[in-house]
Length: 377
Image 1: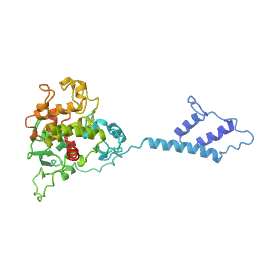
Image 2: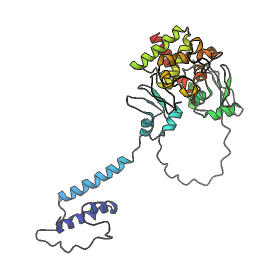
Image 3: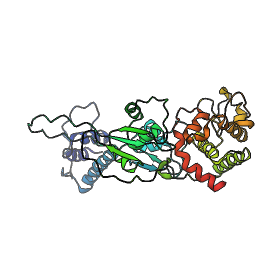
């Protein structure tokens, strides 16, 4: 670049912010990072150089500055998370979480998923609250007397229906499982039963969609007018039925066929379908948590068979059902070996066989499992 041209560009840089001008000056080799201040240009008097900036020169520098500003603004934009998200082909839990600025662990926990759980196109996932921008500084509050202590929070009572779990009820009301346990004097190993009244600390809008809910005011107030309770909601997320792929359909048909051969009632077949859906996505996978493998993620190290045996979907299904056809007699127990399994919820019965670290995760598959059984018979 000629010294006259250098003088023109420096003249332009004098009209832009210092930080942008400094970056452009280094890029155009007008100064090096070591120079603390520009040197005086004594060579600006060449013939034909008026010292004025041409329109082309000004447009070039202005375009560069504008592009840098737009790039900087775009890099800071963050998509707000919706309350729910319907899974599309190619989605992963970590990808969905990153898209909305959430942690993968939070999305897994909110949906009762483990790190080995699979998601499917069409499945509805609940997401954490939206990403909020930093709040603007609050205006100075006028001098007023200190506010009175807040009134005690209201509580809600919920009548347990078949298939309910403590964590499922807590999630429906938007409160933590620990707070529900504490409010009712329960422990993590406690069982709940249909018809039982459970106290829910705090009130949320979720209560409006929950069956058999009776608000109870903390302070004495006039009793509300009685309202008819709506029909019980399905346990599965929004009652959505997950569509079967060819591989999933073949494994579902196998589970149904073996169940029919063993004389297992429909309720037991639904439990087996829900368990396989949660554990492997109804796929005979060759990986899992620790040494878990196959359709039901059975572990060779705990007596379910050799790796080759647990990867045999027919044998794995027989082992899940158990009973007289149990291939692991004396080592593992299947559904038919569980006393009173017919009076248990899907979650309780599946957990009694699988002993999962996420015992409440099976419930969300009930709607899909019943639909699959009806379709495939």
